Image (cartoon, rainbow, N blue to C red; front, side, top):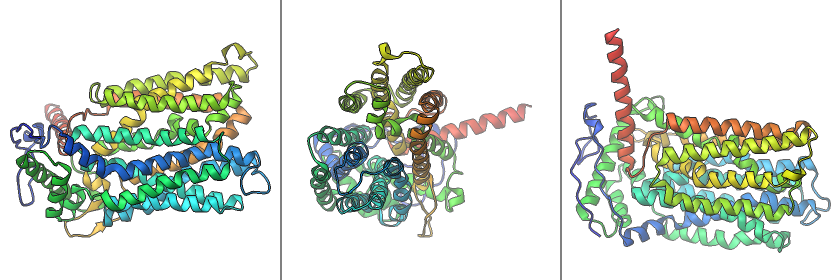
Length: 520
């Protein structure tokens, strides 16, 4: 399908074969050329095929996360390989170590991401999930499950840290948000599938369910997962990058695809020339702001309350004495999935900033209601007439989370980071494995999720559950204000255009400060 030709922009990222010099500040206000403004069905099919293995992997991730509630519930009722049901501290560790595994996955996979590429990094995530299944199947004590949960969390760490980057680097602007949102849907879909199957399957049958999905995932990785043109360009493999991009943009105008190839090459060369050592990674104009936004949004789900609600769904309803706790858990996860579908229609209409701020404010109201309910219960007030509040509040919370907070955060992670901030690759040809923005955000999320989930039940049982829910309310209010004041609008822009936008804003602010100093 032919696309209409847009005029060439004078910004960095134009048609150049050699290294590019930075354009003057005035030129950076003009956006980089949008090489592929429209999408034909053949291009859609090629991009979906390239992402297919990752989608199955994300579904397995959701089932692994859902096992925290369904599998542990069966263990505590005497099912499984253990002669004695695990005790409460063991249960807390089995649940919480999954979050700590995020740190392992993001750190261990960083050298693979830097040296071997995006597709090999995603394949490593599949191996982590396979090791989790094997260890859980042959477990004879809680120690085996500790290791298994760490490995499944490591698989999620790979997905969380690098999947949005991968999709952002291979997709067109329209397909980028669609693919990331589909991936965001599949994670809770896997969790819901685990919840729905739990009452009808025994421990071993429930464990065997994701094995077939994982087998399909590995097969698709071997057949269809390509390397991204950005990684190939960073490593000087320009012909391979061009070949991959033509395969992903099948059906588009030949000249515009060549324009996109040149635009990617020019942008990558400029970014690498500005950050030739790890100390310079965040020094180029606009890079620090993008990194700050990604760090805050990507490392915050634990402080939103999302990971707690997902891991302790049934327990929260049991403590709140909500009728039909299993059914309520299914309903909460189902609502999140439905609302992610809604997010697909909103994200290209409302824009990232509005969608993120509004849904974060709704989360604030829902968590405030949960905190008030548990505070009244803690103070001895009769809450029986209001026993519907926890279910209603968590439905609203998961609906707004699915409609904006989580999917928009994933999309921005795939859009805002410069290439050096993902993984430095100097012009000398040697990659430097440093703790950069994406893995650093995963480490912060891992540690915060582990600590919060370890102490959620302890604090709730001893001091009252209104305390953690009150903290979640404050965090969501902060994110709502942060989105309004700091997050830029990236809707409909290529990755090259997003970096130029951040750069132009930074240079504009610097010029304004210099003018003010000159006046004074």
